[in-house]
Length: 149
Image (cartoon, rainbow, N blue to C red; front, top):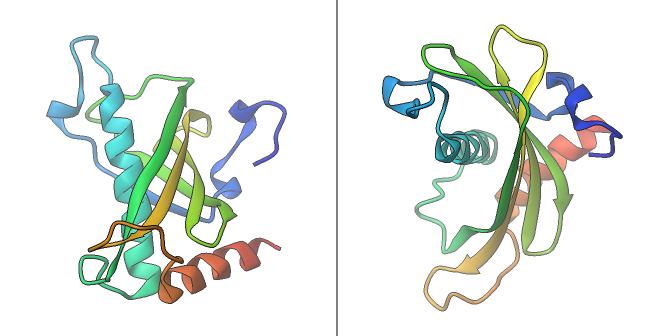
């Protein structure tokens, strides 16, 4: 996602946006969502979208999408009991890997609270060697990229 200032990103910059309810246990001692919770929300948004769009049971595939890299920039605090929305965007669709951009927004806010990045690499479930992205997953992600064009 090319933008001079990532704080200008909106929900419209993402291929898919899902609303998630925060939980009491998500807050840390400082009164906002613990950093690890952001990664849980990103993981949930990506995999929920992949399952819904591809129509496959990812647990039954012979391939696994494993996280090879992740990161997050935090701009604004969010906390329980406010719901949040997570935007997912395919940044790069390779032969065996996918890179996503993830935007986290407090549900009532137009400002992005955090911007994450996430890379999945597909591996064979048994041998653990790198394999091509499963066709159903690739097709679903390619549709999202094409819809943006």
